[in-house]
Length: 451
Image 1 (cartoon, helix red, strand yellow):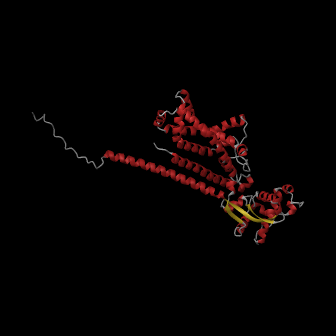
Image 2 (cartoon, helix red, strand yellow):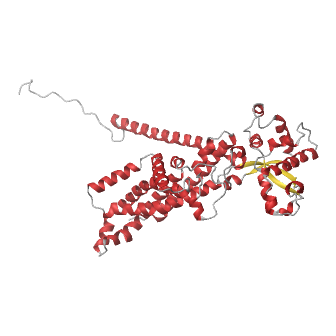
Image 3 (cartoon, helix red, strand yellow):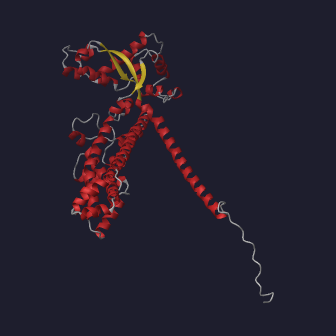
């Protein structure tokens, strides 16, 4: 063998440690660390904006749950309220609120004078800017219910005007009063003098939760209670219609329907309907339920039927997913011991899918509860129902509003007090939505079965 044919000596092999990561492993770990950092940053950003949103809502809406009241002692003058002196309820009802307004203004002026408060507001009419326009109706209702009070001096807690209420909530500033035709700086000075005496007092406003909407001139008297009842009746209609129809359609499509082009077309259309804008369902409800079927406009029954159409795709999709999640072995075992197809579905598959069905239904109801556009198209706007319905039939068929529509109506009004109430209505609506979603999670964990 010649020297040229001999193999060249090989380079010494480098030792690789099993404990020390190589360059490729370090690069992969760095990429994983960056991805983890991006995820944490995304979650932190979402939490930050959620906190900002909640702080904005709570900060802007908590004022709606407090209201300024005037504690006045009103002399119910018989010469103005019962001229005949017979205490006949029919005669007392003939006296309008215009007859009670001077009595309330005299009562407030008398308290100012009795307490020795120095003010340039020395006339009865000067007190008008401090008193709510709803105060006369409040006193009148008490007198009609208790005619024997006429001739006596009765203590009343009446609503202050929205400007006085805004002043105590820092919504009305003194520098802005010069451009305000509804109140003067002298009125604010008088308010400051009456607060230590207990005549002007800001307390919790239960009427906002239980009351009805009010006109533009009585923002301080507006409440969301009647709208809550309207939303309740609508959700009742949605639950009664959407749950059985949606579950029945899901069971048929998933368990009994043959797999062909027709069922494929139905499934595609259901998926597409779930993505249709809600305003389209409002137009459909307007044309079908009101213009064609002549159902009462703005009624919770019509609103519930419109929201049922919107909610059905969500319930069907979630129910089918719950049915599909049940293992096929459950069906095979039931059929193997002699059960029919219907028995296997209703006795075994459906109970196991019940948690998912309940969750999808409640989430669908929560989505319907917050919809506004369909309700606006069927005329369900604010300031329709001034009193709560007295029966189930009137609750379904009489014109009413709903919480989202009421919030929208308040937000577009000029008085800042309505803007504050719109935020307060959002707080109540969010409480309902959080409660419904919490119930959905609890029901799912309570009835969930593992196999």
